[in-house]
Amino acid sequence: MARELIDAITCDWHAALPGSPSPTRATHVRILENGKEIDVCDFCAWLFDFYYPRREAVLELLQPGVLDALFRSARDRHPPRRVPAQLTLAAGGQPPLAELPPGTAATGKGNKRKTKNGAWKDDEVQVRCPLPHRAPSPRKYWVDLRNRTGHAHSHKKGNGEGYNGPDIAFVLQDDQKFTHFCTQHQVCAEAGGYGFLNAASLNAHHNKSKSWAPATQEARDAAETQLQEQAAA
Ligand SMILES: [Zn+2]
Ligand SMILES: [Zn+2]
Ligand SMILES: [Zn+2]
Image (cartoon, rainbow, N blue to C red; front, side):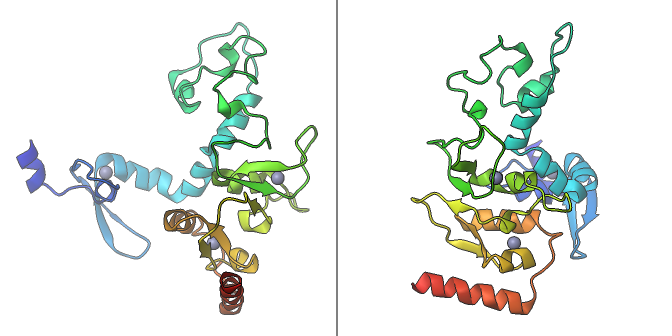
């Protein structure tokens, strides 16, 4: 089996996983946007054809904050029936809200996913959202850093479109510091650089935001100058 796999072509996508993923046999070829070819296994071929072109929408829908909102919005079924296993898994292994005794959903201890929206959490890196929120939200409204894009989308512009992350002047919690900044997109450059805690997060942003308009050279230069000045200050 191992011998066979060594001789076979292995899946480039699985091989790109961090660590040393076990080799997966490639059975398909796909062409990337840059015109180059990759070998992929059955699963990755399917992922490439179906999810990859829709990845922004998919990643957005799978954000923990979005799933929380989805679970909170779910209505009771009469009579209550069992929720499919996949949904149980999607909720992070927690029993679905519909199956909890009334009143426990919001207060279940050790169930930090049910923390009130906007409340400070000790175990998450957070940004403060300066925009107004629906009552009875806390006046200082905290958002998990990793959910800031989804949260930004929940605020609507005049035309009904959601904001992008860099449109909102999120304030990072005091004891954290952005070290990596995106100036490649117009919206990021106009914000004076969109900040991240590390290279991996910046990279993920680039991967997720390929559809965003690229920054003009002028906007980019202005943002980079501003960042250099801030770093020197
Ligand atoms: Zn694969
Ligand atoms: Zn907000
Ligand atoms: Zn950007």
